[in-house]
Length: 287
Image (cartoon, rainbow, N blue to C red; front, side):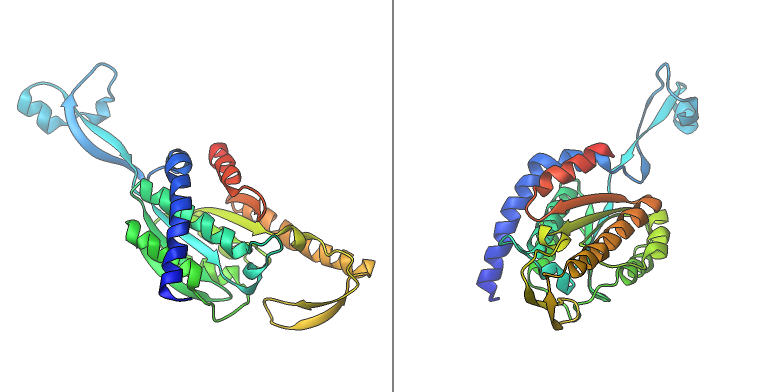
């Protein structure tokens, strides 16, 4: 992709997702995720009903009149976007790849965080961490994240969610809001998620395509496994083949749901042909 085309794509995503975050998400995001605690703001005269534990005794002695410390919520937070860029994210059946929706969701969340003056970091992962951008503030930083989401080419097409979570725990020492965006067609990450969830506020955003849920009866079909790169002939007319596929898909889905719920992490499910805005807003409001 040449520079001109890339900038055009970045600008298009910025216009769409910034509008969403400005008018829809910023308020919901602000109320859904609390600050780290309370920070000192000012000193004022004591009023009836004030907590006596907040009396500033030095100021009180100086003015010979009771004064209290006023605290306000420390709003600044850190958001880390963990985005699956394995081969399965390039799947699409409705003229839109999962990768496109993933990029839009990530950009919308990044701009929502920016509206609240929060830091945003990015982890792109396959079966290893392919790229890490440490959390920073500002529009230019968000635009860099969008550029990487659009043009980054993974070295591997496989997925390992556990490795990504281990990397998160090793690099992000303070509590952060984590949005992990993936199709979650993986397993063996229960323990690492449990550890990461004790420190961070984690939400799994599952992006999927309706054609992944079931295989239609199309006879003999050549299928490419996007994560292994192997092509094999599959007899889709076989009921056993179709049932085995559906069973495998359902097992991965159930593992995702059960593992995230047991860990106390949030869940958002959105299909590529659905309105992800409605799904995210519903999630924020339910928190």
